[in-house]
Length: 221
Image (cartoon, rainbow, N blue to C red):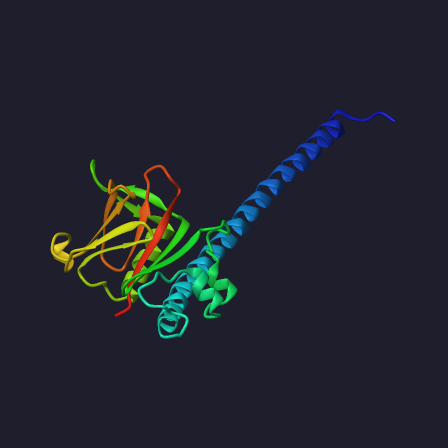
């Protein structure tokens, strides 16, 4: 049987269409996969943010309860292990939602102040001018939410978890009612970073890093 030239051409066209359809199907599949990944990442971030806020509240309540219990000796630092040993926190309250590494969640007190640090919180640095950077991303968003929910600490300076926090409501952001200057120092007193926030929480970040430290100070008075 002799095949006509038109039949051969039609067969090649059919093969070409099949290949094109395959490529299109793969492309659509990749788009769907990316959309699903973005959805789950967004859902995961939202869940972690909610968990961070819950843990902060639970730790604050636990510290207040511990300070009133016979286990508290007075004028001593209350840390995460103390609260856990006293049965005041659930296991989920002792794990940083953003990292399972040991030490990724730190708790410490100084007088009537409670400090909570969440490490490895996703952050980014937004350049606002040639000389000034500000934190962005999830870390900064959490700092803003917690600052709106928690009372501002009393003016003054307190060192918690190795970080010096200086609260002064008159020197920064006067147009919005003042701000808080958070000075991060090392053990020798060398200033590592100075940032301004408008509440009891701040995102400590380093330029070039993709994560920051969500640093929270609660005034328990």
